[in-house]
Length: 283
View (spheres, rainbow, N blue to C red):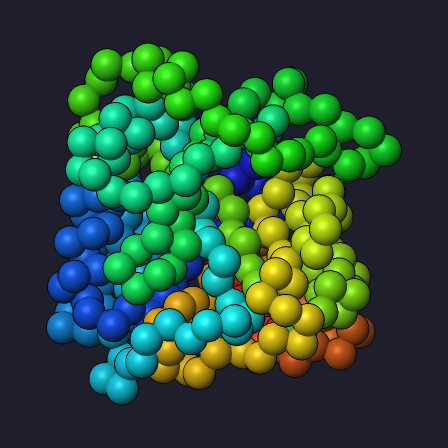
């Protein structure tokens, strides 16, 4: 893992907050299967971490929670980036031993495993290939979805899985949206992200020449509606800014594209055109 994609001056995803229908059940999954540790916990909320300090994922159980709604905008998956291929190998061995259902893909830039939590929230756990091996042409990075060489990956490491390594970060987030043209305007002209590759029905965006910090797709249908506030699924995610000046420039750009930006205590919040909520925080 190359830290430059997750530190100043890059703008990157820091934390994801999701609703779950049963906090105890979800916590068991995220601790025993994924390997998070609990940073803080109440009866209805748990903040999860890899390094014991940095929050990466927060689980909330609203009193009136309802199951995840189909064919809505919102979370497609959040992606947990492991430091090395050996770590991903240990994780895969662990997943095989637990009998958890999973998918797997080789994206050229990365090797990825896909799971769902008990509420159907999508999770990717992946490792990056070195950026020197990524192929760029005219500002676009080559990505695909090819079969993963699972045998090679399993053979990479015999290290016992002992939970998420300290260096684990939230590598990216991938969202369902309602309209790609409106979405591109918001993320490119508003947030200032670069469009680094496209698929049928999808855009991938980043800063600092990463392969993607945010994926966006209309695979739930053009014009998909936002889910209910109390539905299982994503509440918000954070974008981490290097300083106040860059964040203020972004807020100005967001207002120019018609986005509503609200100041909270020490951060700002906005919504993309599909109702996905983003918190703009400082590093």
